[in-house]
Length: 334
Image 1 (cartoon, rainbow, N blue to C red):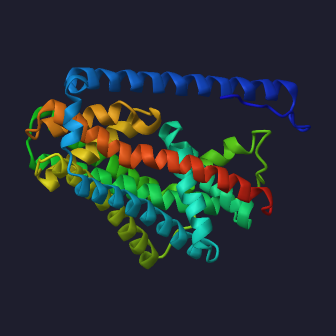
Image 2: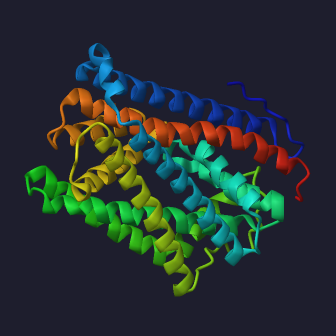
């Protein structure tokens, strides 16, 4: 992937050189993380024995697999509706077409970047397409991510109901700590944004008025509840899809326990900072599914099929939609 640098008049040569170096370093780190993730994934695949037992894939129940794929599409649809609802509150009603463009495109931009930082594309799209203040777009993303993380950590905390080993207690304590930090961050978001502003106004590439306060626009309780419920539905669709995929391979797993393990795998993939969580999520989820009594060769098959019809499908779909969304911005307002 090539990167073209355009020399801006207001940026000095030294500043431009630092920008080039930063982008190059970020690209190298991203490539390194992805390579590590792929190596981890290759290790789990080779150790599972699925390469010598590819016939396992042919045993999948096709109707159930189609149902799982439908749940994956429904999950994407819930994300589109959530963005449309947030847009209606922060700006004005946008079309389903544009809500789909920005939401599905972000599935590509967010997942190819560490920590899903590429999700900021949605704020950029709204600014260019509708003239929405960039920070309003950031506020919308904040509510999406805040509730997703909160629900994932709450579900993951349910591991305490499964077994209280030493590592489980540590994981539970870490989960409670993160929940506490999320709560503090929500109520003190403006404070952290203010700290970031002091740095942003010094960057030559950012056009931010030093005299303007950057603040997260808080939503009323009723609107917050609606966004929270949409996010719950979105994640429930994720949990049910994995349960249906396991059922398609002939294993009726405990849905609550499976949801807890899937949440833990999501968190591990996110913490790893590897794009898509490749390797980290598959490896951890494979371990968790196998711990539920599923043979290792079938466990990795369940994980790979689920990831293919969810994350990897969403990535390809997001890439396609990103082309259309970038085209839509060519004639957008600035």
